[in-house]
Amino acid sequence: MIERRHLLAGALAAPVVGSMLARPAFAADHAAAEKRLHDDWAWTGRYVEENRQLIASRVPVGIVFMGDSITQGWRDKRPGFFRPGRIGRGIGGQTSPQMLVRFMADVVALRPKAVHIMAGTNDIAGNTGPMTLEQTEATLTAMAQLATANGIKVLLASVPPAGNFPWRPGLDTVTPIRAINGWARGWAARQRATFVDYTPVLADASGAMKAGLAYDGVHPTEAGYDAMATVIEPVLKGMGL
Image (tube, rainbow, N blue to C red; front, side):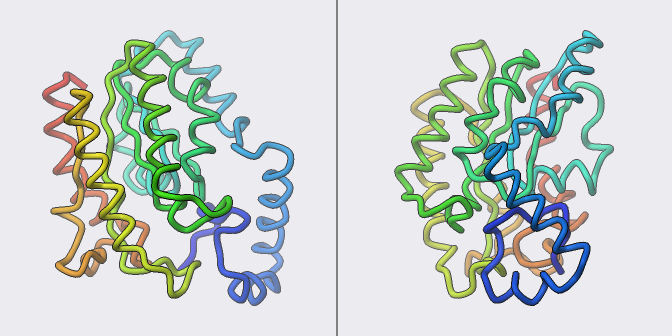
């Protein structure tokens, strides 16, 4: 199953795209995503109005969740988790460089106390082109440094487990996910940031997502997000968020 809101240009393997383009609704979404990659590569316009309204409301922002479709899906599937002060800024299909481009507008400008950064899945998939692990580490570091420079506490999340990516058949996902997470754990310890590790509640022994926690092996179900909440809620409670 592939949810329309999670698809961006380049997010699916060519044969899959070819078969699905015959569906009018998908074809329209695909065309819009292709156009956006040229007109607004990082989709900086996605949250412009929500950000404007939030800033104008003067409601204090406790934490912003920056991420891709996994973060977007969290807000969609478990909106109750995002109570006042918890802001979701996920965009399906995005890579960490795209998040970095919109970080000032979608995180810093909201003046939160903390930011939860979850990125890497689509870097590994190569959604916006091939990326090395070092490049992913660099963009994650850049986002964290922007946050720290603006007095925002950093919560660096693990890349959720996946035994494969449906839109990238045959790609080794487990090895790079473990590599990014190992780096993130060490980076957070050195920088006195918080590493939020969802791996114990989501992954099976092979490094894939546990059965029933993701509808396609990558994107969490409601049960998957509930499992993630058991990890992050104590952290947020300890921070008063």
